[in-house]
Length: 317
Image (tube, rainbow, N blue to C red; front, side, top):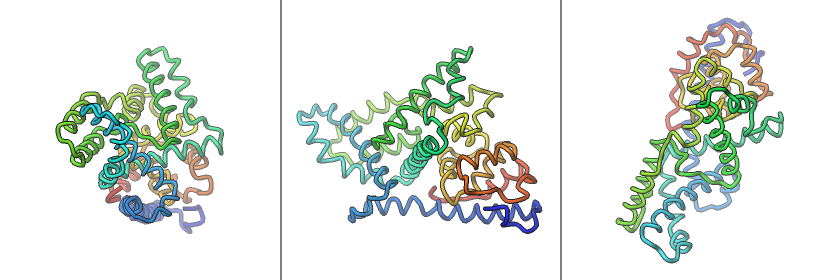
């Protein structure tokens, strides 16, 4: 997607180009989850050299272990280490059959990887971004408190990424429910599984998970929320949530638009969010410095960008 792509920078030509690239991106997203699942369950361990596959497997196994710890508590298992070791791979395989969960983990991997890339390439701190520093010092005690909680959650997120961990409590509510159903169905001791399920659900509060906290912060910002629509000012995590809310997309799909070959979706999301041309160009310099917006992109209105995004249908993403 470069300025040289268009010979006549008319609005119709810009929309045609973006529509075609969006469709190509949809195809890529539609095949991503099935391919990832295939690699996860394939017996050829050489395939796990790929970072995304390895991290996905690690996080699925971590989810399984958390369940097994709860189940071991319920069953009062004496040898907890052996109990978990005997069951974790089978339960991780069960979780790998949940496409939405795989898609979410894929998005988290892209998000963390981008945050670390921006730290290395642009000296953008993956945790302590300027916006959070400002909000922690806010006179609004509620905003200051949520901002502090988000800071802690972002620090844990980066640490978890490096260790290939994913707390059950950080899952969105629907994925938490789906994961527990899969884990419960794969368990051998029904009574212990039922107790583990009940205890984990009782302790779950989506609003206090990382993504819930970020959403609460952005929404609490109200009219000042557009300040979060800058990756260098807000950091990847807050930027992704703010962009998703402002463009009307799901957050995971928004994060996937940060990856390669999703330039059309990313540019359309920014325009749909009402981000001005100059700021869109600045964000691309951080996210994809090798890509230039097509000539005439400034003719595209937020409403038209939203309409183009609405035609997108990345099945399985």
